[in-house]
Length: 301
Image (cartoon, rainbow, N blue to C red; front, side):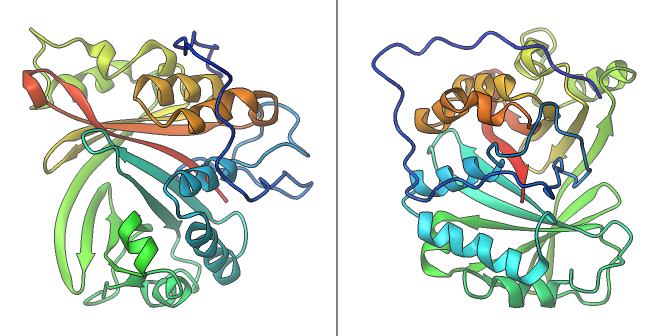
């Protein structure tokens, strides 16, 4: 496993860091905890873990920052009661233009061996929190399904679509209608850097004469374990898997996430130093230069 060096962090001027918004006590790692990246691949903690914070702390804090802590905890509880622990990947997304946050839950079944991971079952499990409106026309060979939840949907038990992932492609499934979303490829940054650079330079949003690759491959994230490049309908994206907590702090502050969330990763640095994280950014050419339009962070529970 490649371990990222500690990047320098942007300096934040002012008074003491804000206290966490969450009223709930953050969960602690137990002796039977499992650790997964955003494709539900298991990893070994990079420091002693027992008694420290679970990655769930950042998810709960994001719910609290949106004023939806109770609703978010209910969503997590529904998943745990329906599927059990350590089977779900969570993501928090932030749209830069509006500063709106949304959440996404990812459910994997690589070998299609788990009967409890199906669209009808997920709809049943999540019913107390959201109404999943997605119906397969016939059994599809997907390896993962995700459910994205906006703050409005979480607050009002709103209707949401599903996203199905099949052979490096993803589709939104709303009702019984499919909409193509993206195609993506995974790469090892140690052995496939030329392919990564080719994929990024081939983006319609990247002008090699005007844009710098450091915007899309910033040095603090380059020593990740895996990279993913995606081509989407209105943007492209790049993801960095298995980064250390200081790199996550750099990412949050660089991309303007709420300081309460970024500060949690520094004030609780010793309690989060065992974890690896995944991050991603969607980019386009807003303003005539390649720039992030949405960023996301990922953990598991």
